[in-house]
Image 1: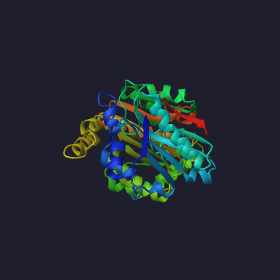
Image 2: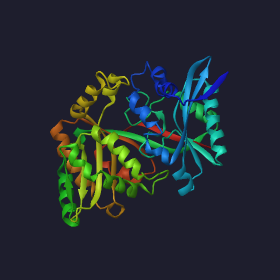
Image 3: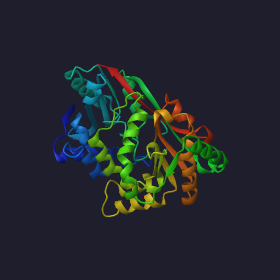
Image 4: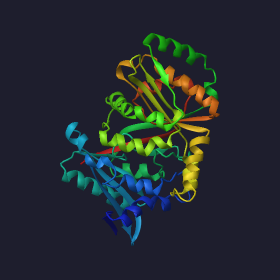
Length: 373
């Protein structure tokens, strides 16, 4: 018999966060989160997303042992402002037992119906900056701090329970050796700068980055607004993400492009790969986890293209040539060997066209699934 229980106490929420440590203990590809940071993101007094969203954290028990978990999310900004009658689910992990996955997903349907919603979709988080998608290909590739890893049977369980594909994502990588011929970037960079009177901003310290971060999130909202399932970042969330993510990014890997009036027209964030550091940390910042992360921030030879945003009026005008030229010089100086692109919607043709000259290789595919209630 499967028993579903809501995790509400600190002890129960910690069980929710740490269940995957047991489920993936033998996997060389799973990357654990920092437990304390994950708990903060689920704290309704600390994460501002709870001002626009509700979440229910559920644990599945079998013979008094935890065998699964799921977060059921209703983003009211999405439901009321965009009139998308969807209940989200994420942080979905379970043993290979269809009774477990069915019991957890039945709670998603139950909560969705309580709020008169029309369908369920997942796995996905609260917003577009959270992890997304169930892995369907690429199980032999190490995960990252901004993607979920899962066993291969997850797809089978969802489809067995009547879920159908809603969105598809790909993850790509390319060797830095593929971009050693920089002549194209330098020519395009010069032309675009002159034509639109643009210039790049580079940074050496986090302090220099901070005055532009709010503008960057505004630009993010503007440039991604047309994508499916986009939920804008609120003012409170800007401050939250600013404190949570910016200090962990090497400031050299944040690039801004501004116009003659100093208006931000494009940005890009590249993160050093923390995958191996997080595996060594094994969920804990102390005593050594923080050291591993700081070392990776400065010394990792692999980077992740996390976000790139361009004002709609500057899209398709070659502004990315400025960004790529700046990264080319920074990567060359820092000895970067490999570049990874985080999950991108397969229907986002504009972002895919940015990378066609880099000879990228798809190493993973993932999906969100939906089911009408």
